Length: 171
Image: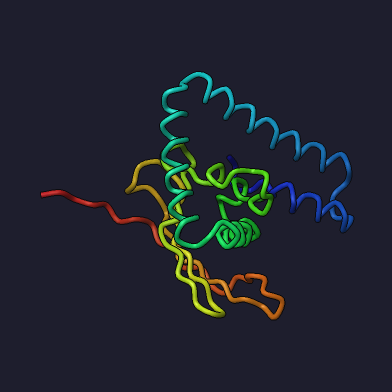
């Protein structure tokens, strides 16, 4: 998915603020629809790879849910989806909706990958270590994102530390 396309939530916010017209909103939403249709076609072309990726995503989601609880994981994923310019935000824009299974937001092997490596929780600060980008491990971008809770309990971005993964050599 393109990184520059705003998420549907951001598009509706822009439309409600009067920054874009209805035609621009519809054109951008049709682009989102087009990307979804491409993903569906790819899954139908290679059902075995789609099945394996689905199982791996379910396992990763179950592990996160067991460690932190579904509600908190959804809160973190929603906060990640709100970060402007964050490439996986097009995957995470509806993470707060409980009717969408949690594993749908994680991509272990299928590009663009999105993996949650670690979540560290403190009373006010939450640190999240994620990987995103290409499927090859050495081409992924690893970011440590720090959120701070505001007085309403919402997670607000405090800092982002991105670094390209260094190649791993085996001897």
